[in-house]
Image (cartoon, rainbow, N blue to C red):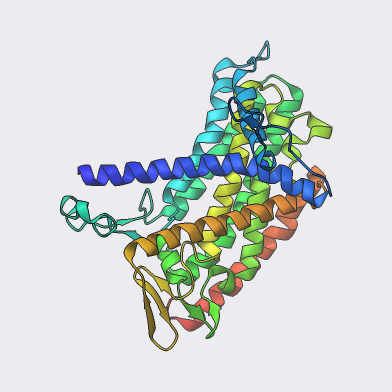
Length: 382
């Protein structure tokens, strides 16, 4: 139907625009947050001058990311002499594209009724409503792990196809590290699947509305606080950022698996890393922080303890849910950058030992305890 096509094209445009904006803004956040933590000023030199005036718009260095993007677009694209041309060209896209696809199954809002939002179009939409999610898949959580696994292939392709020993070592490190920590991520999420009884992300978010134990929000982090820590740690390692950035360790491997890349091909690798920070934030928000909802919130407003109802217009609910989701994602992204500038880099043997000898047993222990508790209740969600 035409109406469905229009809505989903809007959703796709929003998702791509949001991720691209996060990727750009997070480069600035990384620089300025690092500067604040180091008692420095940070990026503040790039500016845009208002035509025919001497007024320079600096905006706290926000234009540095734009300048970097323009620089990468116009730089010469050098290629190694003995590279595998096909794998070398495909690898950046194999890394970049799945990162965007992951957001397709993440709900960023509740139920959208275009007829209520725009009364003039009510007859055209004829009462249709749409979950604010590009792909409503019952197995949405499984699709996330399927897409994220594809980026492992891209990193290994980049390292192998460059015909460079440092790139090859970086690709090997990336493959073993990402596979190891993806297993830990999967095990931590299994606890939530046992509790909520579904792998549908929107259903998980809806079950997190309300409270537990009389006062605490019924978020995943309340049910599974230990799993939340393990998941976020494994996700940072999956994104290959300090303290887990061994696949691209400058002091050892120059730039790791993308050493032989330049211009916008290198830019795709770097941009994918920052977009993945936002994806990790969105996924953590969805699984552990209640997603787009606030406690007591639903598609009609709020239902407070004691049966007190606070009705909200449909437009107000939609805007609130979208803004709440974005703010939660931004907080988690800022925390990831805080970790990146706070901890030293592991040795590579320590990275793998940390995954297999420390995090994996803890994830299995958490899953076992969760299974026993859920079984003891025998009534589904806690």
